[in-house]
Length: 54
Image (cartoon, rainbow, N blue to C red; front, side):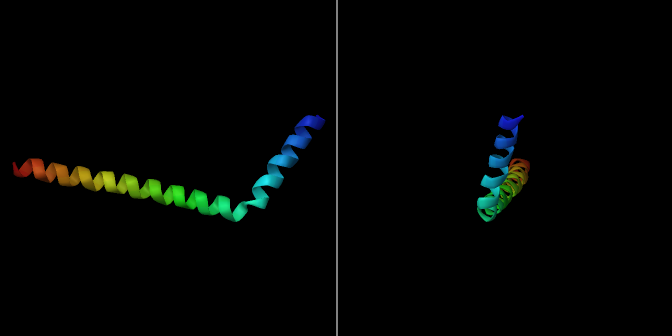
């Protein structure tokens, strides 16, 4: 039980020390994923229109 308790305390102390950095990194990763998925959707739309023209 002591080993689990120590592991839990370490797991909680480390994120709190870098909370702002973690939030910024998570927000950046999410925004990047959203941008990539939106960009891929736009590319598919453009490719479909280009193929329809030909």
